[in-house]
Length: 117
Image 1 (cartoon, rainbow, N blue to C red):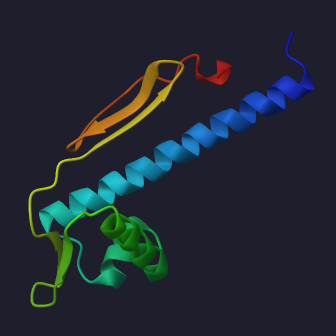
Image 2 (image 1 turned 180 degrees about the vertical axis):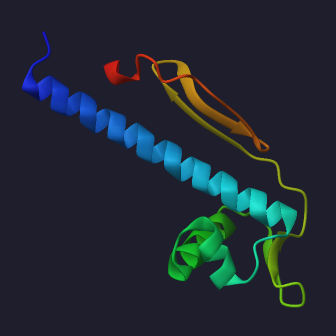
Image 3 (image 1 turned 120 degrees about the vertical axis):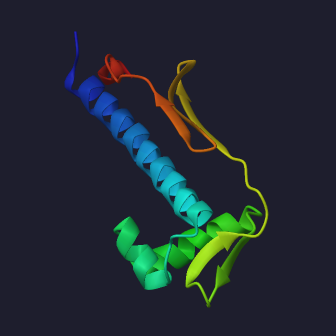
């Protein structure tokens, strides 16, 4: 029997996991655009991501704090990596991977049964 409290808790957990997935997918998109050297300047980058310039600066700062070698080329008007970058994002719940992004290749489970988290 699902009580109101259980329903609220399950809904809250689902929202947290979905928010994490969205954040990881945003970071993957940022890394992909930087790799392709197709970010444009900060204004264009923000537009491509559907975010504000301030958010882009904040996210780039977070990635740089994590030691990603991000540089900006004013001539080409793009961000780029000045050395090869390999990465992996994984979200697992209950021993099952919900999302796994490794070097730009994404796999995710069908979220059937996800409501039971």
